[in-house]
Length: 316
Length: 227
Image 1 (cartoon, rainbow over the protein chains, first blue to last red):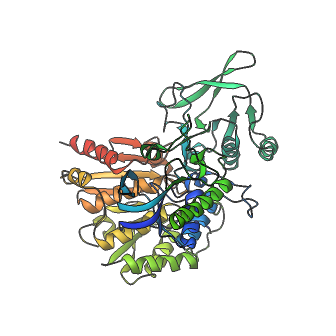
Image 2: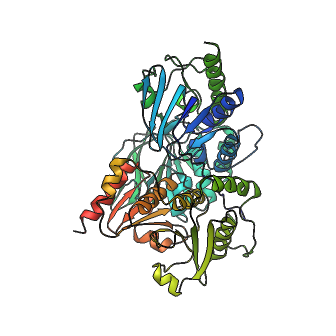
Image 3: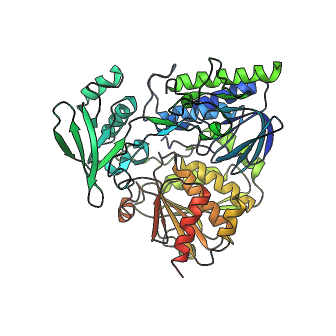
């Protein structure tokens, strides 16, 4: 019986390190391993659990070496691998980072850390749809996490808004646990990988294209989703008990911005091919760079950021 | 997880050997004083055997951890205010009473909450900022924080641990995790559709894993409404 035990990795002490890594998703964990193996003192600090958004992926089928693995399990392996090398401080939100004589002082919930370099691996969070009903019905049928909340809709019909890879995987997961999902995609075609298109068809999941969702409606909880058919201009509605929103991600880059790190107009941190930002000794890796939103690329970028930090700390 | 229709096999060894090694090391680093793990079990309880086995296995990893099993209809259950099985309580057997508790199995992500609770209870303290501590110190009447979770929710342990840290620091506060899938009627009573869903004093509700500073505001609100 697999109960999916997740171990804590709480560290409590404030300390001085060479490199502080903010965020314990695939990028941060990979950076941690590379940093410590290179000989740097490092710590990874995360406001939640180690694993990042990878934890929420019901299924991952494109990470090299794993034909198919639950995001939760992959994240657990990443974390356990990283824990062998580097201290990970979970449930420890960084509140502020200031610079003091060339040293970064990181003020977090559980302590204060001083670092010569910082890697931002802060990732992304779910984007909101911004339609009437979304905020009102949050927790009353509107959700952004199928692994968290899917179970409450077993035997019921739900809409998955957004038909990209995340939305497609969410719909497949829901179908597998006994929920009846319908996918609503804004664009005129399938927006997910062909591999997912095939599963969606095979499982008989309805995938509606050209659908612009305009409202989530109901009395005390979600009862229907209303959308405009962009083809015909017609307004249509579907009766549902729940709505899962997967329309994309927004970067978590506020801490970095406050240090003067440059971002693009959407807030993604600008990095060089070696993961340097415009601020010396500050690096970024993973989804917060907006490069691909893929676990394998995030892990690669994390490794690169740590190697560059090592290079800069050692030779400059 | 095994499908619910599968025959129940009672076996030891739910926690993997590698995980045990890691936990042993963590416990030897951090545990100070004794910790009791109390498991309350009953009849027709699908996960009671598992809850007992997990607690037993954890207790075997360090001398400071004691394991006790009681029936949900026992005198001990009355003393600790327990009426559902399985319930797991982490306590010093004294000032923490039954205030740090899990109703339903602390599996998945909640296993990490359980381990962190054991460490904090053994240390007889928990970390919060001075600002939050000052607000916690105002709470002078019993406040019960219930946190509805699912074991596959990565955000939930933060909400559970916040309530449990508050409970460690203030003897009027009880932090009770409720596994929503194991107790669907209870979850339905509060219309739980997204987790973590927090209910304070069966009155103030909020959804999400918030930082301490926001969390304490809801707790203080619920407390003020009691006056």
